[in-house]
Image 1 (cartoon, rainbow, N blue to C red):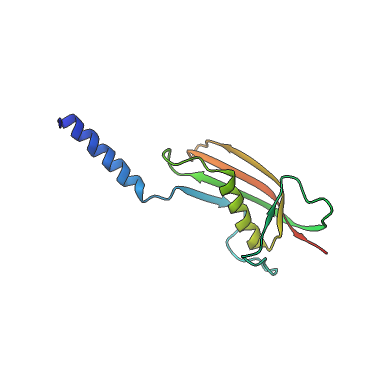
Image 2 (cartoon, rainbow, N blue to C red):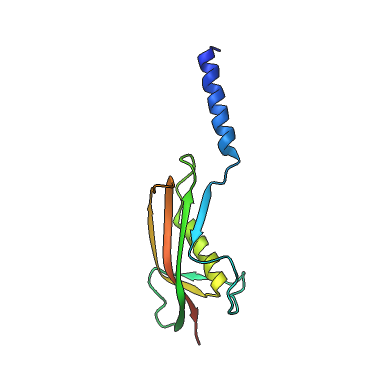
Length: 128
């Protein structure tokens, strides 16, 4: 093995070792991690997501939810709608929401991230 090959292998091994222990994604949101003062939806309860609404169901708006899933390195896969949906559901549970309506998605590359998937919607609680 030539010294050039050894140097290339050493660089590759160092790069892999440096990124192996790193988290792949970061989630940001307008919702704090504190539980809601209102009774929260049980963590096992299903939180529904809709890009429009739920015709025929009455609900009270709780407020907006914004999440952003960002990949931290160029080597990781782009964030997906499924990851953004999971983040929306977790934040909706903190608010005691039954659903998130009017969900919108946006993806791209930002100044501080190699790729992102943003999701925005309105948290609601169903009424009788």
